[in-house]
Image (cartoon, rainbow, N blue to C red; front, side, top):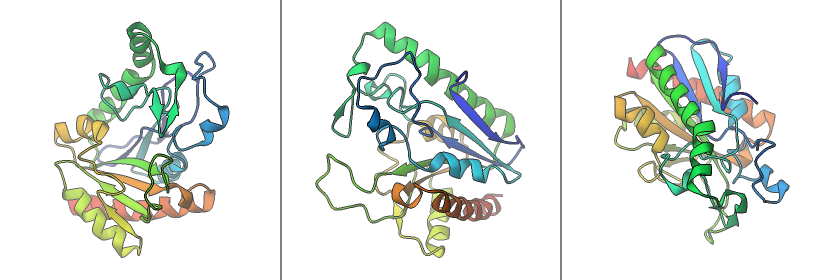
Length: 241
């Protein structure tokens, strides 16, 4: 692994850019998180299912994806670099002992993975001027640390101050007969680092989509939601034109 990001698709101006912060569960060989290796298949390590959805979508002209290539336990790209959670010491009740270290090690980790990824996202948006930026994530049906019932939403739409694209996306997703969460299973006003710094702060149209992981843990589900999101994004491109 040479780059902290993967590019899928053919660059094209005024298209759709798909940004996938938590695409991978890879931990470089020289990093020891000191956790059970089985946890790398868990939702705390990555957003299950979304990498292939982005790749499938990017097979269509006008769609380009950038995907993070290391686990969110190595570095959480959907944070600000000065946030402690950018290199998490705990996730959903699990201690990440290998992430307890000093400031110099933290700076080196961010310089290696975080900053090059965000620099590339920024450059793609500047150079391609996409009509829409889609921030793509997935969510676990149930958290270990939450006593509430399973999350019933099949898909959620998140946003911060800019709402236009997300309001349209909510309508279009409901027309697909999905159980849609408006700012659910959590709010984009609470967790919005990438979409704010890379889109909202520069006046770029965006929406953030979260898909429930049990629906996309297999190829059939990934292809189904890739097709759904392509239909939604095509409608958004028309609506935003």
